[in-house]
Length: 478
Image (cartoon, rainbow, N blue to C red):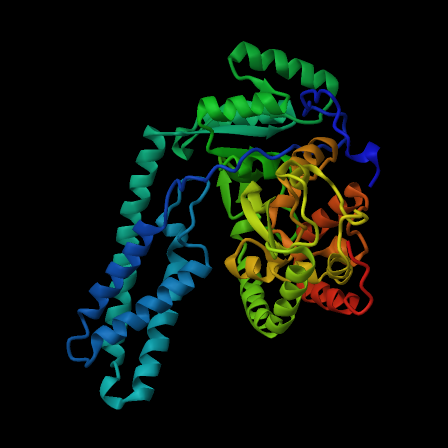
C-alpha cells in the first residue's frame, strides 16, 4: 500500500448514477436501517395451526390425537416454510394459486404421520375414511383462513400503499412507475425514479417529462438518501441489474425486487401488473449463513480449548516483556458497519489512543519487544480473536476488520470497499491466503473480498481455512 493509494482527497463530489453505458459504480454504504416487515407470516402460520386443530377434532376415536396434531402441524410448517408460503409477495396473492402447493404438502404431512403412528402402535392407526375426512377438513380450513388473510392484506395495501423508488433506464422506469400508480392493488406508490445508464436523448426527454408529471429523477447518492428519508421509502424495484444500488437500498432497510426479463435458473415467482418479479434476498438472509455460523462455532470452540496452553504462554511472554495489560482491545468495523471490540495480544504499547486508531502499521516500530516481534511474525497475537468468533462479532473466514478511521478513508477512495461489510468479518480470508496481509494494496484486498462474498460457499470457507493452516507452517506475519 502506498501513500497515494490511501490518501483522501480534500473534497468528494456527489456520485452521479446516470453513468455512461457500460460504466460501473459503487456507493459507500450508509448506516444500516432495520427493515420493517410489511406482512409477516403470522396470519398464515395461524391458518395452518387452526386447520390442523379442526382436522384433529375428527379423530375422536384415535388415541393420542394431540400427538398427531403436533406431528402434522410441525410437518406442515416445515414444508410450507421451505416452499416460501409464509414469505411476503410482491403483489396480491390468490389463495387458488396456492391451493396445489398447500394441498400437496398437507397430504404429505398427514400420510407420513398416519404411517408413523400405525408403525409405532396398531392402536394409533387412523382409518382411511377418517384420514380422508381429516385431510379434507384441513385443506378446506386452510384455504378459507388464508383467503381471509390475503383479503385483509389487499385492503391494507390499497389504504396504505408503500413508497417505492424505481431503478432503471429513465424511459422504462417511468413507464413502469406509471403502471404501478394506476394499479393500487399492489400497494406500491412510486415516489421517484433512480436513473441509470441509457441513451442520452431518451434520458433528457424522460427527465423533462418526469419533472412535468411531478415524478423526480434522482441522479446522485445525496438525492437518493434524501428521497428515502423524506418519503419513508420501503421498496426498491430494479428494472436492471445494479449490485451496488441493491446493496445500498438493502442497507436502507428497503425490500428489493427485480422486475423484467427472467434470468436463467432464477424464475420470477411473482408479478407486478404482468412484469415478472422476484425478491432479491439480502446476503444476511440466505440459509447458507446459518451453516457458516455453525461451522464457526464447531471449529472455534475446540480450537480455543486446545490453544489454551499456547494462550497462557503468550500472555506470560507479553507480561514479562511489556508489563501489565496483556490484551489489546481495539474498536473495529464489522458486518453492516456495526462496531465491536477486537481482541489481540499486545505487541506494542501506543503512546495514546489516537496513535492506536490512526497509525496504519507498526510492524517495524523500534519500540516493539522481541516477544512482540515473535507474536506478530507467527500471527499468535491474533489467537484471542477466537473469542470474538464465538461471541458472533466475527467469523473464521471473511474480510479482515479495519478501524473506523481507515474504513471512512478507504470507502471514499476505493470503489467497493464499503461493500466488504455485507459479510461477517473474519479471522482470515481469501485476500489473506493470497498474501495480501499487512502493508499491501487495499485495492487488491477489496477486489478479493468482494469476489469471496459474491461467490461464497461453505466449501470455499473450508478451503480457505485449510490454506490458512498450511500457511502457518511458513509464517510471514503482518
